[in-house]
Image (tube, rainbow, N blue to C red; front, side, top):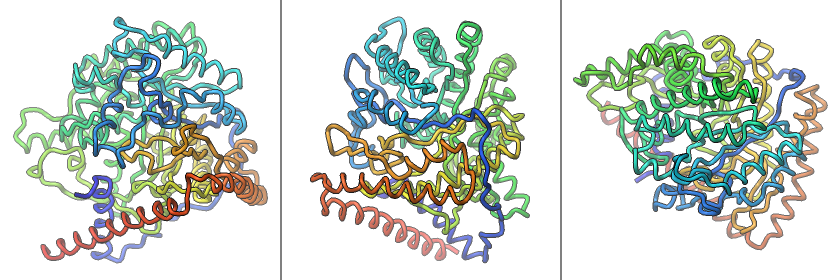
Length: 569
């Protein structure tokens, strides 16, 4: 049976082939402009990020409790090659080393998350506070500040205490709202005198959809058509409660900000002259980012979500919509609970209208009545879902400006992976990705979008959830085969450092010199890695052949599905 990620890729590819067969579509008809030379506003903050489960390791050290990701990754077959985050980058033991990397890059901020079960092993504040866990984050925050690096702290980056999943079914239960608020309040109490930027949740879309709809992520539940909506409902209410707690108890003393980080791919109509495609593309964005942003800014779910899910629920004979309802009091309580909006963005899709009959069952994906397509010429260096489409970034940022009244934006995640465990540190594709995407962000600022910070994702190669260590997003290469987890700078470190020092893109000549300098600096690191006896020629051959076979499987599956489709036609 094909992995779900491969099936998704096949689905996209088949859609692409089907459109090609139906009409001679001109993929180039959307002209998105040329490169813009210029600099960012004074005070713009440049940073990088990571998260607790992906980087810390030390999964059962110093009193830490088990998280849902500890439990999920320890189940055979859930993670590619049965990898786990048990040790990961060993960030728990390498704080000083990693901060020296940040300082060398001249980062202005570092985004990290606090592991809920590391400071509350049972998840409940009144039962047990793990002071060793508190000390770890105290030390991290203090060392960042000593090096003039601002901490941007995420309270929840997916690692719910396992005991709360077992006892309450996690985010399916409304009890999580108060329990999460207690955890957040403890963080404000212990760290808030030094932390001014708080993010409640990272990418709640993934928490809800991949955790409770598809089951690809922890806790691995497949509650199709209902689980994701229920989890999201509780997450939104938990965010609002934490915001109000900070606002009433801590804001006057600590002078900080509380926001949320929402991921959002841009959806572009396949046919920009076709009203159905235009509506489908907006529906794609509303079901993705709007699902969470619209309640926080306007007090309720996007109307298109209420309409589509409500209609399909009625067609399925249900007495009420599968999308939960906020009371009038809840709408008022939730509205306006966002001091800044964090945006994580990686890629774009072309969107077209596609009707899914209600008889095909409940599903978040079929509720949207749309199909996602990709341009076969889009660069695809790593993750099967991540194509480099820079212009989509500017489109999304302008959408947020228009839709939500131009809120203050922090770009909290943006970056690109490579799929192989490669030892070539001259990552020219990542340099190109950063150049193009950061330039589109600069154009958005010129459009009037209120962007204050950019966070490259990520500082280090790390555990990539269900993909294990098979994908690498890091500016720094981490040798996971070495128990010491040494870090080696990729060329993109020097390139990003040049962007930071120039605060943008001064002129063409400087940009050309940046790339040459970056390639020079990565050569020495390549030589160090090549000398490592653990990285043999045979290992390299294996790692190159496996992705090639995966690609071949995807193509063969797509051809087979096309054959079946044609027979049915």
